[in-house]
Image (cartoon, rainbow, N blue to C red; front, top):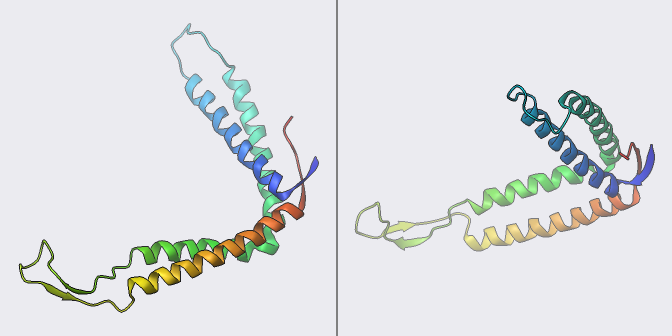
Length: 152
């Protein structure tokens, strides 16, 4: 076990996810083959290693989750703000007289309760809040230390 910053633990977790993905590829690609075909990897040995690496990933994720408890509200808030931004970007804001290709040839009158300018202002406000929350999370990740099993 090694003590590392939460930021480093997140990088190690991502690397561990990639390791597991690579091992799965080896197992699925090499498990069934023509009789007598040359094999590059011992599939059973690779599968055994996959189970060990999966257990290691579970432990890393658990340590990260425990360390993130104090900033979990900020993490959830960022996710919801991003969802709101995506939603707002899809809200129609068409106003005034316009000819629609699928409608009559006469212009149609449109109105919008929330204007495009209001949506852009709201999106900008949400983006600033996300930046502030991300700064808080980054400070937390740099200062908090977790103990994890670091692969050799």
